[in-house]
Length: 123
Image 1 (tube, rainbow, N blue to C red):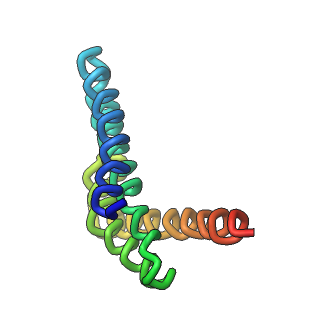
Image 2 (image 1 turned 90 degrees about the vertical axis):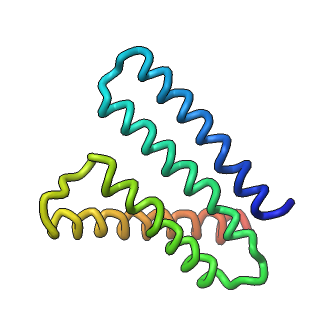
Image 3 (image 1 turned 180 degrees about the horizontal axis):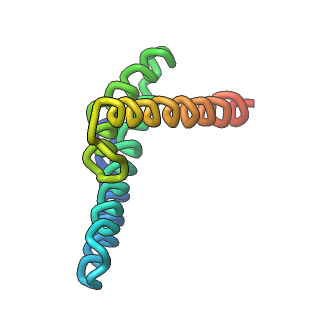
């Protein structure tokens, strides 16, 4: 299957589900911060799901795949985190903390996925 088509399918499914949940929450008059948080979570899930196709490009090394995926995350997920309202953004230290959380979480998740899919499932 074409990578763009696969990415579109992988991204559309969580986007539709999370947007539906967000709309239901909104009609139920749930706190607007919770509604916004659910939508932002849906955006992040959508982005991460869609970009997993990068790891199907067999001609690329794992290092190149990881770098391209990381760059996509920097320009998409990091802004979602900054504008989500989940973290204070009063000064440069707050922004550096968000970047730190982003980097540490990314390293942990990448390492977990590498061990799980790269080592355990390839036995």
